[in-house]
Length: 369
Image: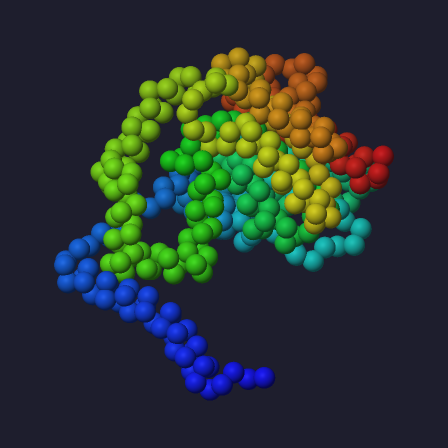
């Protein structure tokens, strides 16, 4: 039974008033604030993201990316060979999205050692892996998605933004060598990535425009900042945080360092597990590579051993094959200068040994041993 017409009209009038009254109040408030001359524009300081080294003849190797923070720039010349970054933003040959029957597709996610810092592409482990597998009777192709300066949080984002679309059969994740323990770039990597994700979303774009153009929104922002002591106080806290890091960099390698890291040890373990679970959810099998380092680094920066332990814990808990990079590279007892370009990055010989050990592991994985 329908309500009488007068009752329905009263209900509609109340509903309209409930909508119109706040809008009218907001409009009047906006006019009043404009008339008062109040203005509190957004802080123009953008999120500052450091893009690591790598220039050839003035061309940067990396570009900023709203999802990954940064990535290799397509078409950029690689300093250590004659190759260029391919159109997908990876090193090595450009793979078709469609897979070839009988060919195992492997995605290599990691930092500069995965990208092939200091060596030609055909010398790095990602560039050698398909050939190593071929000698074992396995046809394979490799997507080298390594990024210089990357952390496992960036790798998680890169998997979602790029690697997933290639539907890899095997994902090799090589993180925890050194980048995660570094001081945060203003904010931890996870916070930076989430803030950038919000900004590029529809709601974020609307909120950003309102913040820039609405005086009522500016007044609300002013109240929030004043509750924290005002914009000057907020900037002072930022400067003090940066100054604190500068004064305590000498102890950053300790496990009990009180500063803010790019990715803490606890976050590292969580994001590594999430990356493996995401790849498994897409049907891929995973291998974790614990990158090698020289002994002196681990003595001077013992927190790095915590990241290695977290990698091993994740592999054990998830039932994922683990390749110990240091053991693989040092198995033949050669001097460090034959295996490392510096404290972290493998020589061509170091890469060869890594590729051989990874090939053994992947071979067993795909053959179900």
